[in-house]
Length: 223
Image (cartoon, rainbow, N blue to C red; front, side, top):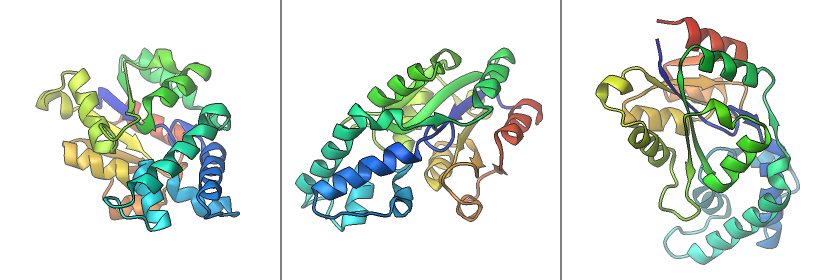
């Protein structure tokens, strides 16, 4: 049974689609690349912003860093003001976190969202007390990828091989599964977020669940 549970934020703990896509629209408009259809911007939910803006706009990560940083700064400008509030906790998630905590599980947030916003959102939704460790990306590129974030969680938990054998990463995108495998952890993919079952299957998530309730069954009863 898993003792250490790492949870992604966007698409796993909270439904942040509105805030993220509106902030991406704001940034793309400022960059002269407007996108009126927010559904097309769903790929921005989960991955690091810099890599996603570079891929979307066709910017060279080495030669056009100024354009990438401009997009990121405009995104964060709106997100800091209002975007972080355009968000909601998935129904049943607080109850599940309470059950996991009552069962003595060690819980961690492992997200590519900057830690400044991560802590603010968790506090606003009164989720902070459930977590032993909260790790987000740094505002610069020092800790940006999901693997970087997981490594920091492992460091803070002083987790060796014995602890890692009882640890699982829960997330909705392939980045979560891929980073978990790289770190030597099990993974659970959730389809109530923004990744598809096909995506999670193609990256070989160890388990895939469709609801918060099913996630609870796996985390609380499975050996």
